Length: 74
Image (cartoon, rainbow, N blue to C red; front, top):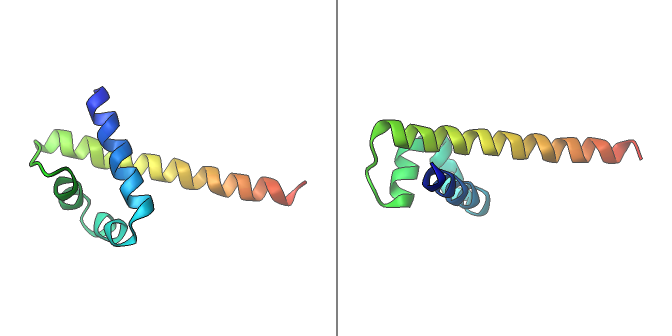
């Protein structure tokens, strides 16, 4: 499981740093992850990574919005 967590962090970092990869991930996340990792993983593993990346990105975006909104009330 720890290995999946590392892969999720790797993909999240790539999505945040590379706009072209972010577009690819948005349009076809399974292919984007497989291409980035250079392996063809079983569906359950790749889906776990994709879902983890999507959840992490959603949480990070929500945190950013909360921080910005919090700043409005100071």
